[in-house]
Length: 262
Ligand SMILES: [Fe+2]
Ligand SMILES: [Fe+2]
Image 1 (cartoon, rainbow, N blue to C red):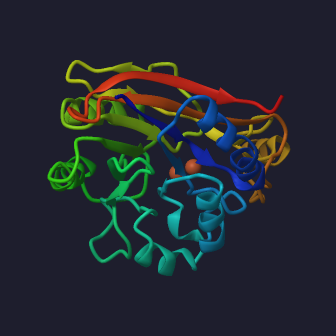
Image 2 (image 1 turned 90 degrees about the vertical axis):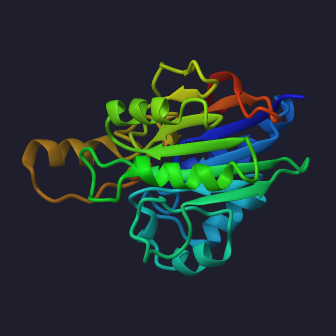
């Protein structure tokens, strides 16, 4: 029987968290979702994620949390990430970083799900090679399961598409996060790997990437330092549903998702 995974993009502040709290459970129920992964790097006030927020996301039905360049912005996540295998930091961070960049978690139905998190290097802070880091993580996870999803948290579509082809046939899905803008290029690659360049954002879309438009515009126009408050208008939960054959690990379908409050 097919295994369905919902992946949701960067949760931005309380408007994003409210979308998870109010809409995730009903969507999972109505669409027979077996497993849910969210990117939580902006869940706390738009920057970072606290241990308490991670815990709340799990209580609201999230099974695993990936992150990205903003992972360490709230300090108490450091101890949580060391003890909770459901929270990931990028696998290509320095080996000395706390926590882990890949994990294997059992779903409610008992299916093992492998998850890998990497950051890109194009227009981003220095990091180890994401392709080599993904190779190592995937090789280790394939000893345990064929259902493997890779969150490539990166700016450039070229780097993300390259990762899709690099892992084609070895993982169930490669999906992008970090830009907060959902792309319309979802497809299943030739080897059975579902791919999308970015799954988008969970947060207020009357904004610039989840932040209040006026402040961001002011910064662009004047170049003066500005504080970017989280925006609440037009909240949406953006992501994708990936349908996988759990025996082969190959994706059968990938579908974009945008949930709005009615
Ligand atoms: Fe983000
Ligand atoms: Fe990011």
